[in-house]
Image (tube, rainbow, N blue to C red; front, side):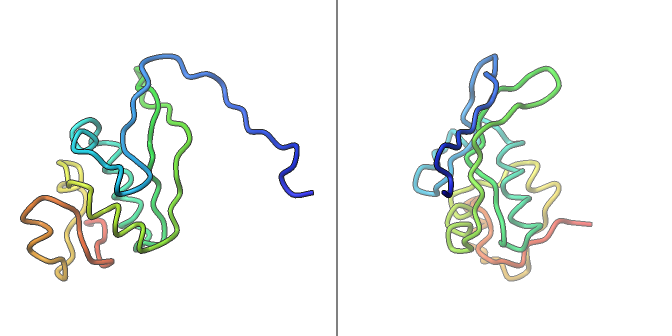
Length: 125
């Protein structure tokens, strides 16, 4: 009954394994913001596009010649957890280029480079 006897298996990923960001806000480190702007932008973008209904983080895997192979992501559905994660995220050049801040975003959050505090952030057109 339920999940008894179920196992998930994936093929081995060859290459240098990289941790791009963390699942939980408390675990975010400054090097995550510097290490991989694409992955951190992706997490930010998902949150913005879904109006904080969803976010994908804990991105990790291997960069290949054609892109990334990522494994074991965390899917957030709790707005409080998403806001907390975003409060630790430092906006990068992709965030600044492809996302615009809400007019309700506090200046203190943008002054130190951290992400928005408002659920009203949307992709720019």
